Amino acid sequence: MISRSRKFTISVAAVVSLVVAAAAACVVGSTAVGLPDIIALITGGDISDPARNILINVRIPRVAAALLAGSALAVAGVLIQGVLDNPLASPNIIGINAGAGFFVLLSASVLPHLLWLPQIAAFVGALISAAFIFAIAMSAKSSRLTVVLAGIAITAIFGAGMNTILIVDPAAYVASSTFLVGGFHSGLRFDQLVGPAITILPGILLAIAVAGKLNIMMLGDQTAHSLGMNVARTRLLLLGLASLLAGAAVSIAGLLSFVGLIIPHLMRFLVGHDNRIVAPLSAVTGAAFVVACDMLARVMFSPYEIQVGIIMAFLGGPFFIYLILKNRRGLGVKGE
Image (cartoon, rainbow, N blue to C red; front, side, top):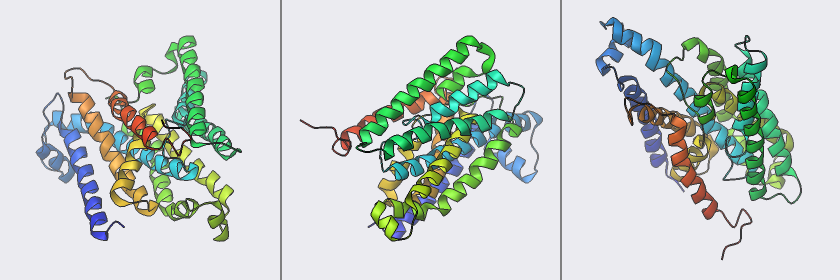
């Protein structure tokens, strides 16, 4: 049993980490901008025009995008792992990110003048992928390993579709390299974040509000039924909410990987399995994690910049292998 004092300490540490990561990401860069400049910008104090322009037009929008994407993907991971009862499930592992990415590129190719369409397309693509995975997970004799393998197959199919679009119509997405790897570009504007923010912030609040239902569902179908829950309908609603969050994150961060896998596991290790606590802490920690990784991607090889998705892959790949080895019995994989 995790004590209340430990949960409180970890919650405070997560919030502090988020504030520190966001402030550091605004300060660190090729152009000198200090913490006093941030304070002056917030309080209306004296700040130079170059520092103001850098903060307002470059760094703060990018940090805001990382905060939104990180929190959305982390909470989506909490929901997906709970709904599918699969510790290896996450938006990128089971193909939700790839489905969203394919439909974003498709909309950018077919109707490039509709700037609002990619966000809707991302949700539709994520929902279609989630529906396939849900059907497979609910089918008879489907194991956890089957769900993971099906997700890999769906990712490959949608990945081939994205490559086909980029070959046929190279102008379908201007920042296609960043989009396919996952990351943020310095040209982000606040108006581009309005739509995702309107989707992500209420979505996270809703996920936190229904986290108790996720707890009941994880007790097993029979127990949930006995407590008056419509399990099938609840699963569909929660999976739809996860798709909405993942799709919105993909629309601004591209195919960012492993956030929804690493962060929920870390939070469950630290505070236990109560999703009423795991969900909000995952949102905070996921946001801080992506901001910190993006800052690292900007300065690691300065003056060159790499996509944050590369760092996520280096971190998430070994973690995924560790989870496979740890859960090989539950996956139906025989040991020696």
